[in-house]
Length: 163
Image 1 (cartoon, rainbow, N blue to C red):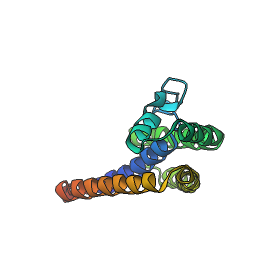
Image 2 (spheres, one colour; image 1 turned 45 degrees about the horizontal axis):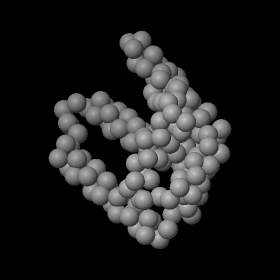
Image 3 (cartoon, helix red, strand yellow; image 1 turned 180 degrees about the vertical axis):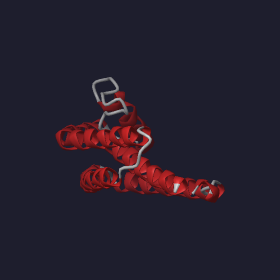
């Protein structure tokens, strides 16, 4: 049971991090902006700007897209953080209330679904800003990342004794 829960939390965390990174939403686990004029203090945009060699016009377009999406994404990220806080409280209570856990899980499923849909929509918008060469480079970066994740999972399989 414990290994399964860890896997579920790992997948949830990966999706959340992917959404947060892709959207450069500007939230951290404490719930606030991380500084700078642009969310994440500009470091995520700066990283992708450097790696993909974005022009200033492209950077401005990306910033505009992300700023436009903040009102949609921000409440979803807050809901996700609230879910984690509520689950922690339930787990720390030392009692198991299946009805509460199921209710929280159902809410979280709706939030995650909406985040995934929003991420896909925003990704499509962001892809329109990139040149063909930049898209190719981004696909290569994603492939490398996926390969590293796969290798990590193969080298660090879940501990079956923790179930």
